[in-house]
Image 1 (tube, rainbow over the protein chains, first blue to last red):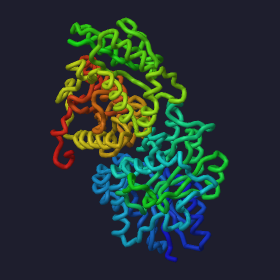
Image 2: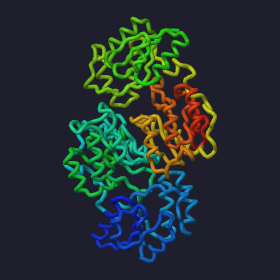
Image 3: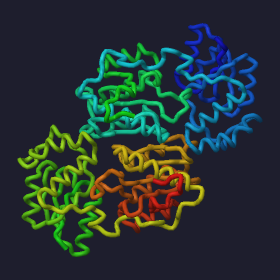
Image 4: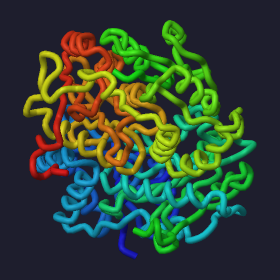
Length: 285
Length: 285
């Protein structure tokens, strides 16, 4: 397997991907993004670099013999005025600023093109770690029942549509009513907000109702920034009184299948991988 | 002028509409919705009724000689299982529940049809109070400048699109990035959320940037539930570091034009009424 350069932002995903490379014996080199990467990433061969130090990063990846790279983890939009770019980073900066004005997705596409222009093959996190995505069907013991279908289909639809607008990757629907839509605040904050809505609008741990749907933006560069479901997502959905979570099968990362399934079973929620082809005619895309 | 039956939910709007009727000498009768209407509404001739006491409400409106009615103010979705309908309310309940499952707008349409079936003419709040809507152009001293146009147009577009999905009536965009979209939490909570986002994503009182757009849902019954801008909206937008607010001209209620203009001028924000016909070709609807 060709050596992988992992560009590591924050959160668990880079740690899991690096572990997966070790498990299958794939050679690895890590660029730890300054102020973002988890300290645990220091356990792997690599260097630290600022987000605008493109020259430093490219040189290190080439010296380490990486042919492919993967961008993974949480990267907050930088304050462009406060960046400290090196020469190569400076060359890319005007293009990055122009792309950023068009939205998150345009910025990611721009970054990928920069890596490709240096000869790297760009892999998606789901390619690096086969089996990390949500499979078709239920993940834990529970599956959506007839009473959940309206919310499952509507949430899946709304998440798709707001993705088309480059707004975000998640939506919560309860009894046909859209309770919340995710933009820059992220899924955890959105679920927390649902917990604070009037009880007449939502379910409760005793009588769960409503569904969180997570989907990649249809317009997006799917090698970066796929939506993810982890134990925290299940716990947040449980606190909001939801009945379950649906994600797009094959296009939603699951952080630790066993732990997510166990949390879902314990809390009484379903986690389900849906294929757009499963949708009934009135929700067809 | 024919006598108006005002069905009063929560918030300031019913108080302002009742005051407007008094000012122009229009006869008025108020149904104060139990647990929602402001106590100030007791100053006007009327009765209190529960949201499912349709028989009581219809009878009182007819006895008072009302030919037209207006539904105004904030009405939270009821917990249908906990309602105490009278006989007429009971007859409407199955239809109301079925409509509610299709979304807020379907529920409002259903309620309007119920009033019409009893012979009432249904007026929109903007019809009852001419001059209460946002006019075309700037409301205070400031207008959007060239640096704001991308955000003005994108926020106006996103607010329209999420309205098409029956999600909500507002969106915030800053430098091309959608910071937040409003669903059940309401505009004030959405603006508060923006204030909590990383400073790199948003403006500040010293360097304002970003725009809140409010628009009616294109699918909606526009006689009820038009979006509204008040002093609190301006203050919330100011705290979020935004440069201004745009609304759809003629279809956005303004609660006290003078106070909103004054707050906007003091805080350094623009409030602007935009017509879809103003949009440049790449944002045309």
